[in-house]
Amino acid sequence: MAEPSRPQPYQPGAVSLFFVAKAGVFAAGFWIWLLVLVLRTGSATGLHVLAATGAITTTLVGVVLGARMALQHNAAVRHAETKKLLVDISWNAFTAAGNAEGTGKVVPFPTNLGDSDWASQRAGIERVPTLDRGAGDRIGRDRSGDRLR
Image (cartoon, rainbow, N blue to C red; front, side):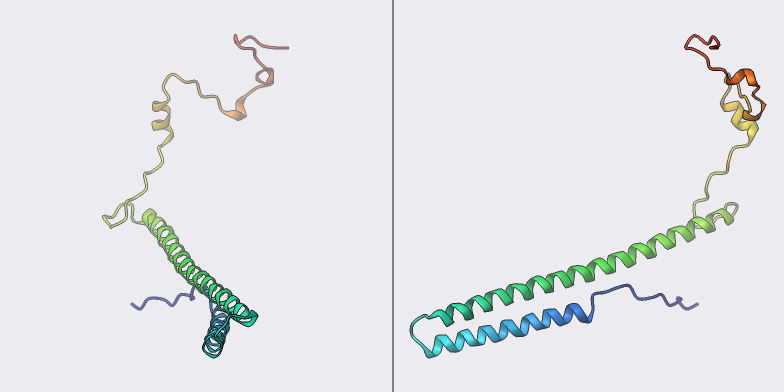
């Protein structure tokens, strides 16, 4: 039986990639401009500082955006795996109730105790149904057990 198709998890796409590529293009442009300035002139000028600042800044921006995109991708994959695991656990628990008598791979849930079993566990404790309480029981009692009026 073929695995049913599941929707693809969210993954950072075109917009994130666009900004990473744009930062990379600007960084490459600044680095090339700085290289041309260094090879043409012998002394450092204000243009050298501007080109170096632009090259460093855009390179850092590209690295930060690339790292952010990679982290978002990893988080999206982990989130999809967690959702799949939760669905599998839920389905496993659902089918365990039907397979309680069988010897499947699923550990069956314990059955609820009957009233007679429950009463035997609570030996010595008086059970009073909530609907059978009279008006006298609504009056409060102090710590010694005497009624308060």
